[in-house]
Length: 356
Image 1 (tube, rainbow, N blue to C red):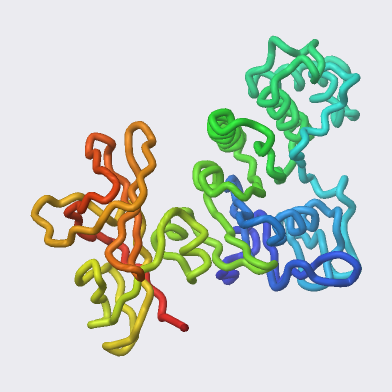
Image 2 (image 1 turned 45 degrees about the vertical axis):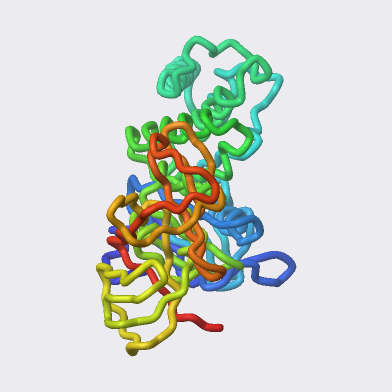
């Protein structure tokens, strides 16, 4: 991360952060920065440290090393931390954390203790209108669906006009279709208000759809902080390449800086590597790198197929060492055991030197 820009260019800065529980560091040397109005994401498998970082940002967890700065102000240092309620940071929890005995309007207005009744009522009405729940102000949480409850939680977090919103797996209790729709709705709301946010999730589709910058974490360390496009097409290491998107590795041998020979033929790419000719490598092949070509001499065998309506995901096999997947429109209907003419069209050549 380049921190040479003026401090005012960043809304949130995390420098060399290490923190954890009982004196042990769960996350180590965490560095990233977020601009005003951007939505960032902490993405990774369970236990990688996503929620630990979020708790440190919220002020719920002291840090062992480094610093957290919000609008150029240090809010967390080792041994010194600004109280959570003084950080101007809103939080949306996984379980919504709504007050069951309060109406929706009262839940949203809970943190607006310094406003007069009329002003508070107007503010609550504006927020409920923003999240499309204006007709449910007098209802109680148990009368709402999961998606509606999540909107209430967001409105309540937005009410005090925070500088930053933290979203802790906010859609994990919802079904797939609702998650997708609500994540896009939340992005639109945050963008409309110009409020920055940090989302924690293990769902990469959710991360890519909603966020401007994404940190991929593994074992308490950030492997890559980048825009979604680069995470997919320019992964920094083998873990990011494997974790982001679909795909698998096939063996290859370097012929030149941007040319690798493999069982799928000679593959040319968009990047130059500095390996010596003859170096053994593993090439990442994604389903969208494979195209159907009736003229191709390469005819791998179909060993698996998964129909998905508009498309079908095939797994092909050339040999014991070379399996790969391809996504074709479903009108191309091939059968198990059938040999299908295909070719590689990998505009982004992703490969890593073989270590074993």
